[in-house]
Image 1 (cartoon, helix red, strand yellow):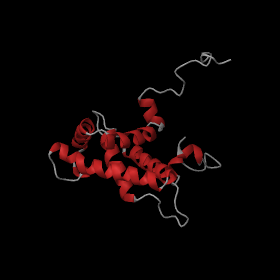
Image 2 (cartoon, rainbow, N blue to C red):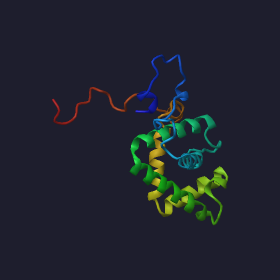
Image 3 (cartoon, rainbow, N blue to C red):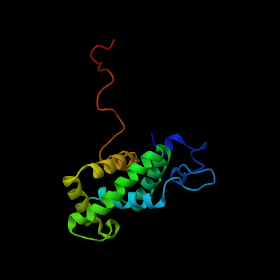
Image 4 (tube, helix red, strand yellow):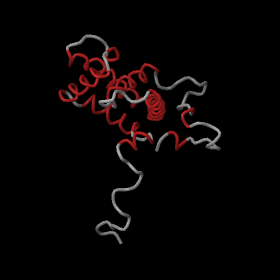
Length: 165
């Protein structure tokens, strides 16, 4: 369930869903570090790029808000683990291309290649980040349409489970 579903405004016509703010501290300060969200964006831009280029900036903005809200609700330990995985990915991925620059300074195409090589070599830190980002990214209606998801289940409801009455 996306943040949009959990916190829908009383009147859907009154506010744009993208205008919703992620979970914040009582004074309005972010729970999730802006640096962590910047790392999310750098990885997501490369991860979801296609032959036509990176996803639209508005979709990345949406993903960053969703990730911030998700991580704010997930708790401190989860934020730490995801933050550590993103830090490791950002540190090691450029080395897969024999570069010493930060991941965000590489072109989107080079970032995508670096992430793929890192995943092929070490797996775990990239897979953890990819799993979380994919879950959030494909909640966006445009992303779902792009992969052909029509909102329907793959099996008909008339198929009964074995042993079910």
